[in-house]
Image (cartoon, rainbow, N blue to C red; front, side, top):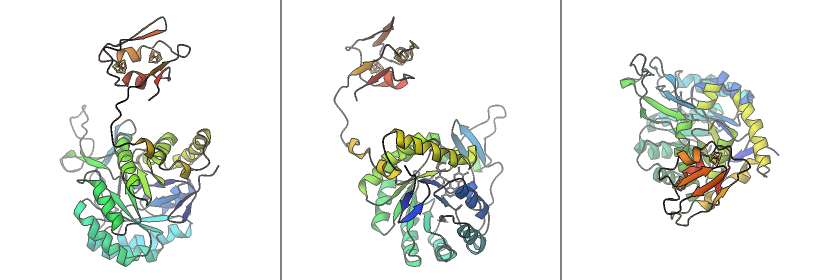
Length: 359
Ligand SMILES: Cc1cc2nc3c(=O)[nH]c(=O)nc-3n(C[C@H](O)[C@H](O)[C@H](O)COP(=O)(O)O)c2cc1C
Ligand code: SF4
Ligand code: SF4
């Protein structure tokens, strides 16, 4: 069993890629992530001018999720291409240079990042309409693989991803953070972060289902690599991302909150999980769920399966039925099929799988 993963023919020690964010603030951060077992690392986004961030600009938004008002890299692009990328390369890091957010900045930094030793270029933009012009110029400036990072805040992100692949992108990173969003500290009435209007961007567990949807849709429609990024915090999340069609798995928020060394733990857990599921490497899982993601909605009712031996009589399934269709007494489960809408919530809330279905 090996976690070795190939992306554009580049061998990575793990399918986990550290996403662009505060942990990739410079060479030191990139090297730390590499030593923690990341397969590759994405730099903080390089732009013409260093970012000036509001205070504070990161907060926990909900369990496993963050709100942030952090901008792009706060060090000059010249530092990245003269010092940070070469230093990380010297340490054996697989470096993905994140370049944003305009065609002019692509012009200024893609060629230099390539020469500095970046293995892969990742393009990122706040504006949907700038992405294809950015890609066109990046393609002219570098022969390195180019990833296009898509934003769920754009209109039709799948459409632009497919257009980008058609226009010469080598792969897609899905997804960027979602927003703007707001959280308020009810003790003070103030927003949690100091961005304009108190707004920030949502990342982490809360956005995982959105990321999965885009990863699945893009990877099913195109035969180029998709990096699944958004809400991965456990080995199970990584497997889900792979099954949705990702070739490699990005991680940002969980590594920020738990510390980048958490990637080492994740690698071990993922290795065991893949083995327990009966597979030999991450790539065997990639796109496994596509065959179940049918365009038509399922109209076939399922059968319920109940295991009285493991049922703890917690009554969660009974309480969760909006239609009062389910009953449980002395470990005898009852169902009023006239009332039941086959919504599936009762077995979804069962904490130990005692109630399940053949869906
Ligand atoms: C504090 C913070 C800063 C980020 N900065 C960048 C950035 O500079 N460039 C970028 O492309 N994405 C940036 N991101 C977005 C992440 O790369 C990633 O797309 C997003 O957080 C979803 O992944 P996650 O749920 O694993 O965090 C940032 C995310 C966070 C939390
Ligand atoms: S499937 Fe839905 S409607 Fe039917 S018993 Fe379960 S919760 Fe109630
Ligand atoms: S939710 Fe599961 S464990 Fe709880 S009563 Fe229902 S079947 Fe039993």
